[in-house]
Image 1 (cartoon, rainbow over the protein chains, first blue to last red):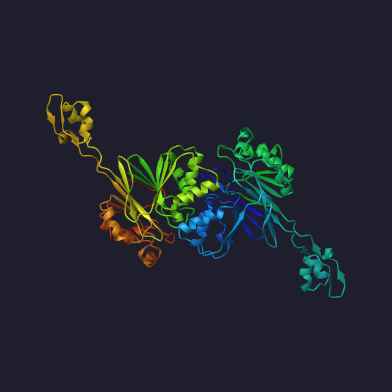
Image 2: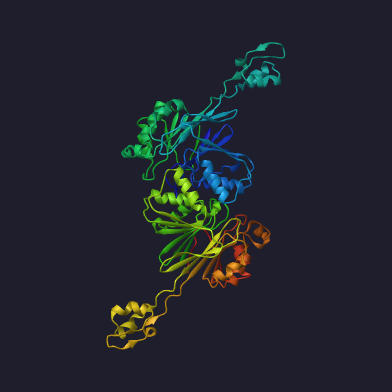
Amino acid sequence: MKLTILGCYSATPRILTNPTSQVLEMRGNMFLIDCGEGTQVQLRKHKIKFSRIKHIFISHLHGDHFFGLVGLVSTFRLLGREADLHIYGPKGIKEIITLQMKLADSWTNYNLIFHELTSNDSELIYEDDKVEVYTIPLEHRVYTNGFLFKEKEGNRKLDINAVEEANIDVAYYRKLTQGFDVVNENGETIKNEDVTKDAVKPKSYAFCSDTMYKEDIVPLIENVDVLYHESTFLETQSHLAPKTKHSTAKEAASIAKKANAGTLLLGHYSTRYKDVNCFKEEAKEVFQAVELTQDGKVFEF
Amino acid sequence: MKLTILGCYSATPRILTNPTSQVLEMRGNMFLIDCGEGTQVQLRKHKIKFSRIKHIFISHLHGDHFFGLVGLVSTFRLLGREADLHIYGPKGIKEIITLQMKLADSWTNYNLIFHELTSNDSELIYEDDKVEVYTIPLEHRVYTNGFLFKEKEGNRKLDINAVEEANIDVAYYRKLTQGFDVVNENGETIKNEDVTKDAVKPKSYAFCSDTMYKEDIVPLIENVDVLYHESTFLETQSHLAPKTKHSTAKEAASIAKKANAGTLLLGHYSTRYKDVNCFKEEAKEVFQAVELTQDGKVFEF
């Protein structure tokens, strides 16, 4: 599981800081999460192949989370993309993008498939044989979802030496990875646990931005390996948090603690703060395993 | 007259090149012309005060000319702008911007005034006491206008030494700058030309992008001081120009020559060309006074 932060600042793009966008690499998928203005240039800078992006998740329709989307869709068209592109986001996102394509008389040659979200309950919005993605309903000034990316339980790993010693035909290897016992070439039953090892533990990532402190997301993200939770403010500006429906670093840490998260990533910093290390310090008073996101930073878990 | 090139490449924003946007400073006005993605960051880089921009001119609704507009409008709102903002562009531009404000529940606190263009004839779209702006109907894949910015004839300049020697009361100075003869304190009539100098010659700037070769714009831009004419291609790719409704450097130069322009600026280069000097060389075969635009380059005329 690899997470590349393309932008992690709030409000507006600036010379050295970018609005929200992340790429999550999970079991062969490259999920783009949010797409502020300038995201396509950030993708180029970080050498992320455009063609690998097949699913884009947009949390909400504030500009710092999606103004780069129409440009990316348009660039894909100019580059001759043929593969389907799935966009998950609040109702209205389809109208915004298609209106601009219509007025530019520039329809994509590839399939652009919108999955518009309206539910206030968590729902499964994407699934393949290795990964599931659920919404995390958040509380912000407009309809907003976070996203929970979960690896599925993988297959068991063959213990190659043990398998060969046990004289098992290659044709049974697949059965073994699926957890079955098999019969070897001598007609003996070989127990699965004697020739396989546990599958790699499935990982999970929760993206929660933008939102005010919302305790009822805790059951949805319980035991998540990595939680990105917005922390627009420090406690010194905590009066602004409920007003603007954002969170403080301390509140993000409280959510991480209650959810028993593995690691908490902070971001969506207000540009009023010169030094973001204070966010980490504040969060650590509540929850130890805290990391600061920064534009261009790559996390491997 | 000062022109700052924020972006002059076609199609998509890249790490080192930006899509079309320019700032023209003319008699105290700061006109923003086109607004590709990333324009607000380019404005910051070039230290152009956001508050000085009161009029934005959008040539057409292809993304590389206006995908940065909604972000700029939104940033003005976040920065607490109060001054009116006028946007001139093709019909549809208002719907695109207001739809996004509606879905983000983020209306501007300042007046956003759209001037939607539909005419296929040149028209006066802005005027104050010092400047006029006309559309230049162009020929592209969608409805497109260039813009002609013209300084008005200014007042005559006082020859301070001559005025004082002629013993003229200060109250008459304004009359003198307006070209009138006046009577001095001794009752003698003083001829205007004896105590004043000609006004500064009014300057003009024509922005023509995107367009295929269109000779009938020549009468509209005759004797223009500075002509920016798109040159997406070189003659080696001239077969692509009519197909995509763009121009070659040679065609841009032909327009400049026929219009008797002072200086030709080239831009909107296709990113297929590594070295843009070839554009200058090609244009110079037809028209001598050619300059290449580059992102960040400032021209003073």
